[in-house]
Image (cartoon, rainbow, N blue to C red; front, side):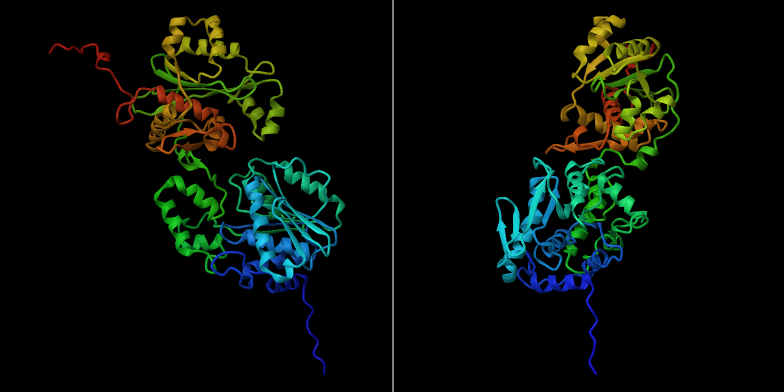
Length: 520
């Protein structure tokens, strides 16, 4: 009696092809036959045995789990393997040329290490292309610097480390996804560590995939849940299925140890190793610590010494004025921030930035300047009125734009002498900002800040990212931040001009005591 053999599934056929023709491209076992790890096999089954067919597959896990190797395997399957369609176009997309070259380089090594593939695939190193001569299939590595992706028709697109994209849009991704419309069954593969914030493109795609509304979208996600100790092996294993297979355990555990001792490294560790949504740049203050300083803000009386920071930004962008003072004798700095945006087009800007400026304006947290810009006259009149009714000692300002503000200050009622007395030029570089951030950080850590959970300032705090120079000095970096940080810049400047003693408390002069005398 003849024995009927079970027919291979599409995934099993692809797994068998990879293990027959591909070689390990680098590392200690370079050149040896490739043996797929169990989690890779499961990825293939999820993608290729999906009864609904797969339109998009998202694979997200910690770094060093051979995500690029798996991408190269899928690429070669569609270039010269069982998934290849004659004369089809295949692309990989990345943010930078260097990142785009990583997948190409790995796939090229696999081709050159395999006698069978090397005989049918031409490697074009300069152009970052692979051509299967027998089938006419062509692969190209693209980056965001590419002049255009329009006019292409990809059967397969691999988006490498899409988690690096900040914000909800990426032109190259959108161009390639749109270009697949001409294909009958296009496949889009996204393999990446998670993006830091919920508003980033990959996070939006992952959250949509979680709903299960489109059965053609496959989500393969490994991460450490929030309830786990981030420095435990259990948390590491949850995000890294290769931990017990081929990862360097000692290296990963050392990273965990470093992150546990140095908080500035924890965010990067949680994002890259634990695959959590955590800002990989060094955040200035954690959300929980900021929230712990959300006490009620008291009004400033006419005698409360006030120090403030003024971040003018541009006339059509967010402007921040942040005064601080200590109305009580408990040493707590109370923060009463003011923010402006142009009134015209406020709803449109809210939609564009995905920030509820219009709601904040309605609730009194954001002022809308009349017109299409926050003109300097409007700011100058506000500052004059504020200084007339409060005991303002110093207002720190960035030299950018102040020359345009000063004439309006004089028109509003300030004199040259009062401007010189109150307004203090405050640089945005390491020299000025590092001491200010140190003071602000100390006050936050010691619970000597009360901000009342002001929503605009809280947004700025969540977005604030610091960068360091080789000497360890720090500054806030607008270009590294995921959103507006103007309020935190102004708060840091205010703290920078507030007098402090060695303990971080306001310095007092003995001459404030009317009975003080140098004569005993």
